[in-house]
Length: 456
Image (tube, rainbow, N blue to C red):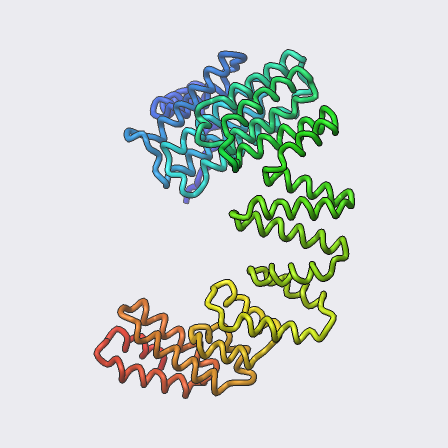
């Protein structure tokens, strides 16, 4: 039997002319291959290199789009990998400005691809993030460049930030502005960036409450001022923007760091009043107010707020509440248990179950499970230690109820899975009794009988 040759061995046996013929024939049928060879081995520099790189990028897009101009889900992975290979090519380019331009071309194309590719799996989005990260890495190479080249890098970033391709992608534009802030050691560039930040802040500002982009572009401006200008200027900006949650949070963090707990308390309390219509923010300010009470040793206020936060859904504050209680801690438990037991509020109902589980109150858990039969699946193991007959009774009721709701084989299988779980407590004999009972009730459903028969 002849030895199977490897491709490398075959190619090594061919003459230069034969290899050229093979490559030319392959490239005639594959324009992307042709462009890739030209870019990799053409020896182009400067504008010619960029021109060939752009043509390769266009060839890749055209190849994957096909006649319909859209990249289907199954092809997006290959397309994204091609773009990542181009990013690697750009990163390996010794000319930093050329590498930046190449990376920007890929970034723009990847963002545009959101409109012509099915990116359900997030692969194009990953290319966008890789390209932005690559631009950040290239910026770190700026110190080796002349001042003129650094200015050119910065100006290209500003042009990219203004590109309409990012009009629906504020988060990407923000990342580019953040990268641009690395040039702010130079006063001229810092002033240019500050003008851009003010422009985008004006664009993104919306009414009394801000958009994500508006808050974060102002925060970037604040960070630039704090790092490159003066603490006094940064503090003035911070104080003038306390209406924005991101700045209020910074101010509170600084107050804690400086042990100005009274001021932290004031800021948190003011935030609650100001943002009273925004529950998520109110909870944030309450948790910070709680920390201020802790640091100020205001135990009574801390205990009251711990109870409030607990009843709003954060069970961690139950442990805090118990730790703050001087009297019998079981009194706290009994009071909360009574308050939560009959509540129709979903949050408080969940808290009630967490509470009785935390205190290992099996009697209360059994009572709860009797009125919420479907939860027997979750609590059976714990309850069976003390209330096995009751567990069997509740489980049996649950199985019968679920069986009454079935109408197809998929649902029948769910019931048989329930019966299998029931077997762990009822044993083989108990399981068979349930199977026989259901077989009698649903004798006119052959599919159900077939599934039940698999349990015997």
